[in-house]
Length: 201
Length: 201
DNA sequence: ACCTGAACACCGTTCAAGT
DNA sequence: ACCTGAACACCGTTCAAGT
Image (tube, chains in turn blue, red, green, brown):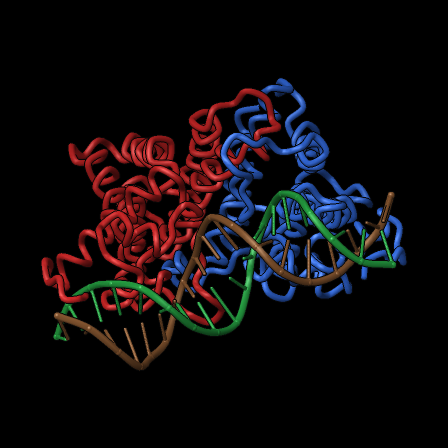
């Protein structure tokens, strides 16, 4: 057999990533495998390694696409430039909404861990930095007398906090604290943090 | 062959859990497998299923032990009953210290996910609830006029926040915000949240 | 009753062989 | 050059067979 040549390398990469994306969306990161991906696109295992160095690389690239989608939602949430206090809450709500509606794809970003010693590619880190900047911009407007360092620290604290609320909120494991929605907990975090942050400005 | 009978069921369970614990500590959750566990204790694969329903159950029980160890550290951090503002920071620092020194075991608690539909056993949830109560107790002392509901919400927000800081701090993925230590970010979160929380009390 | 070890249905990755 | 499919070294889980 061999030689199908129906797709260019780039096309093959594209359909493989799309197949991976829908597998993760349907069955979570654990439901993804090299054989399942190629099965969906009519190739055999070996072909995957023509386009990706490893399954980890395919997952990383799938996750980068999820980061792109997430960034679009966040940017859209503040596209009409509301006042910064409103904007920060809108960003948090958009993050939570994404986590709620795209749970498996969102989770996959954090579930995936590179083998010991390997480091995430720059393209990945840049996409994360871009998201942080959205938050920093609003914080800078909110507390104009703070140093860039303070703003960066606050952005990180707040973002980590909202993320933590989402992660623990979806883990039924840690649901133990009765009947509070992810949104309520996130609001508590934002309201109290921001009032402390602004007062000290 | 067969019939070794060197260990009671309870002993077998104990040495299996110990082997699992040290595998996770050394190689992370991904480095754990049924065959590796039994290999370390001189049994064959089948034996594991005499004592655990599945590998997931073994992991869950390993994680419960980690929760026990974590609880001990947290309780010890406030054993001398410092004033509540100090106690809350001590709890956060103890959590961070555990995450830093026992990273693979701590991570395993959150990396492990039950198959769709399965729910965490009560013994697990109780251990988590116990940790929450440590935080709630201090918050109640700090803001005595708040309702139990408010206290529970605040405990959850704060705890999620500190956890988020740890998770994103260890993910080199999201390190992108320059040179801030996990402790610094956590302090920012606590200081600002608590000042907002107390002012409104 | 306890334990083994083969069997089954999966993995990720490599690579000689075919077109 | 592209692609296959067998091979290798792993998985989790089950279960007939042995003591």
